[in-house]
Length: 337
Image 1 (cartoon, helix red, strand yellow):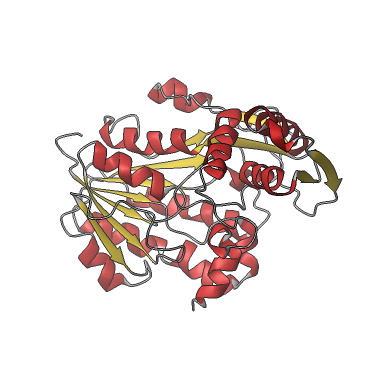
Image 2 (cartoon, rainbow, N blue to C red):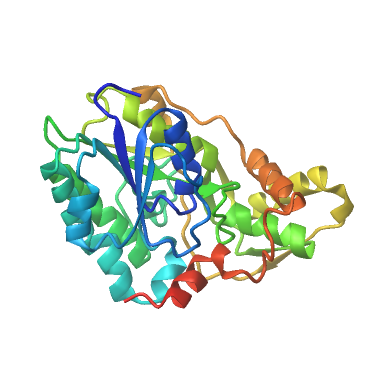
């Protein structure tokens, strides 16, 4: 823990990534405030943890933001209507949370004395690219409202940076692996769940290139960003990915890892269906290693093994029917406006 940063606000801290990140921040000695709607349950964070304050509320509520940001030194902004299909629900709702609420949050954070702002964007801002390695300078080619608004927030954050307000944007690859607030609507997690539950993996398309990052790696990065010097972070954008595979290759990796961990499931079938999801890009994460000396340590195989062990331990009840694992269904059930 740096001397300057003692209290951290994590927006969306009870979500998939937040549920892994928040315990790490607490273990590192930070005081943590979580601002979240708790759409996916209120049992994913450690109960009565010393140094943790949970605030149930909406980031569109500016009065609540001002109260929540009091005495906060850093913000890690995770909250959003997450993943592309979620935008099929209500484009107006999703725009209001993912885009309209962003600038007020940044402005209030700076005026409240926050010194560091970490924004979780997405590598899906690149849309479709045939470049062998997509760097941070690549044009943004959004295919959906989700990645369009994620990208549109980045220059807003840059406008607010100042000597006393360090801003940094991370464009993570698709996150995979186990979390207490598990998502089973992300590529590797979906494939693993179907292999375990149905002994059958359905590949939609197959040729699309998709980068991935283990949830333990991306949450380690967010923690590390708080302790790094301001200069190499200031106003920068970093891709954060590890392995780039086609969706078909991911299916093969998942099947092999599942069968190694749970051989009693054999045989696991792979079938292919057409897909309307054309997103395809192969990102380069060389900049973050060069500038910050940071690189991931965990593989897709590690994520699949972690998921298999969670299934085997009974930590994923009703994986095919419980709406908590699926963002679209959970947001629909919440009837947000």
